Image 1 (cartoon, one colour):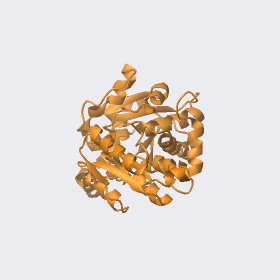
Image 2: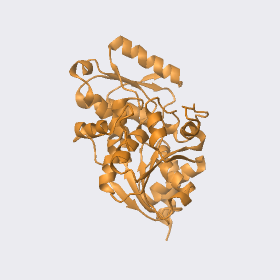
Image 3: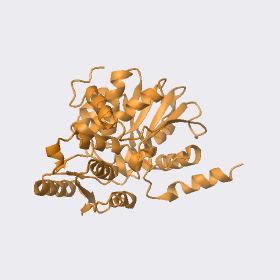
Image 4: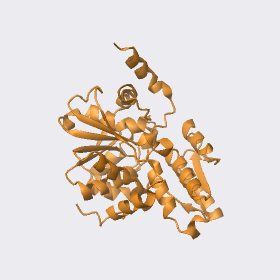
Length: 328
C-alpha cells in the first residue's frame, strides 16, 4: 500500500532505524498463554515496557534529537508532555550532550516527574491544560532558541515510533493481527507506515479507552475530534490525534477499538500475573481491547504492543500477583 502521500513515509521509518541503531533496545516479542479471555488466540507481546525509559517514546525522541543539525542542537530542545515523552526527550538530549527543557503539567504522574528529575533535569511545571503547556513551551523556545520536539505531531517522532513495528515483523514473521495503543497517534501512525509497506496483509487495530475515544470518533467523522473526557486511568491515551497522525491513521488503519475502564484495570493485572510484566494502564489497553472484542481475533496470531511500564499505582497489579502466587 502506498504511503508516499503522507507527511511521513516508510523511507523515513527506515532512516530512523538506521539513525537510532545502537541507541535503543531491541525489545523482545514474548509468547504468552493462560491470560483469561485469550484462549482462542495465539498471543505474543511486544515489550516496549522494557525499552529505555520503560516506554516506546524513546524511539521517537531519539530519532528526533539525532536528526538535528549541529546548529539546531546547539540551542537544545524543548517539549511539553505529561508522560513518557518527557523523560525520553531528556534522555536523548543527554545522549547527544545538549540542553533539554521539559514542560510538564503539575498533575503529571509522580513516577513520570521523577523520571525526568533522575536525568538531572528539573521539569518546568505549568497548569494542566493544553493551552498552558503550549504557552510555556513557546516561551522557552523564544527565550532559548531551543527546537520544539512535539510528543507525537512531528515527522521525526512518528518515523522513530515506527521502528518498533519493523522489529515486530522480523521477530514475529507469522503475525496476522497487531493491536497498538492510540493517544496522539504517533505510535499507531508509525506502525501503519511500516506494516503497510512490508506486510499489507496484517490487520492493524488502534486501541483506546472508551472514556477517551476521540480516535474512534475521528475515524467515523472524518475529522479530528476532541477528547470529551480526561479522566481515563490510561493517562497516556487521553490526547487527541494530531494533524500529521490523523491522515495516516484514517487512510491505513483497519479499525479503532475501545475498552472500558474496568477491563483496562483487569488487563493491567493480567499482564502482571500471567506475563510477569509491569505495564502502566495505557500499555495494557491492547490486551483489554483483545479481551473485550475476542470474536474479532479468534483463531488468529496476534501481537499486542505493550507501550509502557511506568506504573504509578502498584496496587493495580498487587492483587493479581498475590492471587497468582497463591493459586495451586
